[in-house]
Image (cartoon, rainbow, N blue to C red):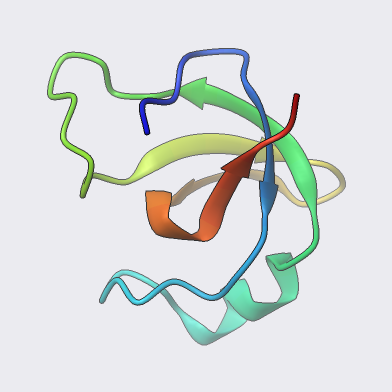
Length: 69
């Protein structure tokens, strides 16, 4: 799945990525949008920057995100 800037997303599950921190468990269920998908690298394993409603901007693994249409 390729994320693009402005995509609406939801943090739907805990990530299996080693970058996942325990404080990120509080993000599950939150919605927001992609602010920097890192299109230059376009690596599905790379972290992408998202802005989460009420929690600010964070770099999260892609496997915990789903697109909202």
